[in-house]
Image (cartoon, rainbow over all chains, first blue to last red):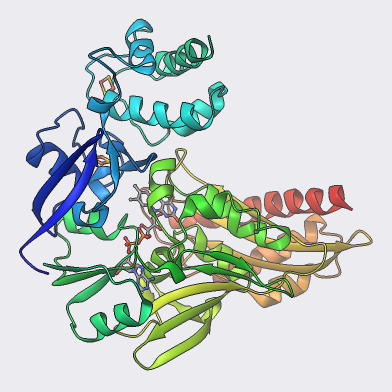
Length: 158
Length: 285
Ligand SMILES: Cc1cc2nc3c(=O)[nH]c(=O)nc-3n(C[C@H](O)[C@H](O)[C@H](O)COP(=O)(O)OP(=O)(O)OC[C@H]3O[C@@H](n4cnc5c(N)ncnc54)[C@H](O)[C@@H]3O)c2cc1C
Ligand code: FES
Ligand code: FES
């Protein structure tokens, strides 16, 4: 196989058939081919977490994966978290907690928080900090981010 | 760039043998990051992600554990098979970077990359691991201690892949600990110490130690271990062992610490690791 490669991704519940160069990252395929620009690109090195998405339910850096290597996978991005035009519980908790400042890191933060709560519905502050440790924020100071995840955890339990 | 995703190891080896510009792709945490930074431009990638044989952790009769090359750091960090002395590998994996990178990176990728700041390398030397390599000339076993040669340099031949890492049975009653010193949580180590330890009647009956980020490859000094075996792990014995380890180290100055600072950390981290390991084996006894 060389040149463009045909792949099929299940993105936010919708099947997407794409033709991509083998060197294209999943991040570039999402942003440039599918125009899902909610997932951000900052470092392309796996360091900042702005590009965090779920691949088969697992939080990963989309900048470190080649799109061709995720052929056949289920991808969830920030655009796929809400339902019926409403924000997800986690998204709403981030808004209500005042956790968001410039917002650039927030897609990744919220995707990581969603992965954490799916696995551990009642995390401690410490567990939250560890789960989000790969998501850098240059604005917020993280306190309200942790508050937001706790609030989401409470609301989901309620 | 060409892309291949074979379903058998033999097929992967044949693809790599047929194209000198082809590289194996494991998690991609390092490889794709290097492509993004335009440091490398492989002619072809051979993804190892669809080869079932590489994905399992298997405990064999007799206490050996065989870890397939494509087992992720997250899987290692949560593995219930890595107990006793083998916990050194589980604990090292749990301190690699962040959850997202741990979900992507693999043991085979870390071993093949041969970065002396990697957390798994010293843990594998402390566990006396054996690297199983496979190539067109067949399979061979290499002791972890001999496998790592220099910065980002291993004994792996052109076209050869890491198929698995084998941990031999750990001594009865042993534990494994990993101490990692970082400037910020999740960073590469400024210095790290991997220890496998067993005690008998208040004295050290078995110990293996390897340092990470202390030189061009994991640092192990058998004479330092000999000083500790039979001792009560008193301050004097630890200081003498640390001295030998520091003398054998050859760290670099970089953003994570100066070479001198790293050497100062050797006795401190070793004391901490031994105290921690000791309280575990004595707590369990
Ligand atoms: C942001 C970030 C932070 C990190 N922090 C840490 C840390 O704190 N501690 C730590 O230990 N590590 C850290 N790492 C490294 C990471 O965890 C992986 O161990 C590393 O990326 C290699 O694993 P991989 O599976 O991603 O390999 P890849 O990136 O796929 O491959 C790495 C190299 O090995 C070759 N290769 C891969 N698999 C094989 C094989 N089976 N046989 C032969 N050759 C092979 C590839 O061709 C390539 O040259 C970090 C990485 C990133 C991106
Ligand atoms: S853009 Fe992927 S981690 Fe920064
Ligand atoms: S809100 Fe600005 S980087 Fe996090």
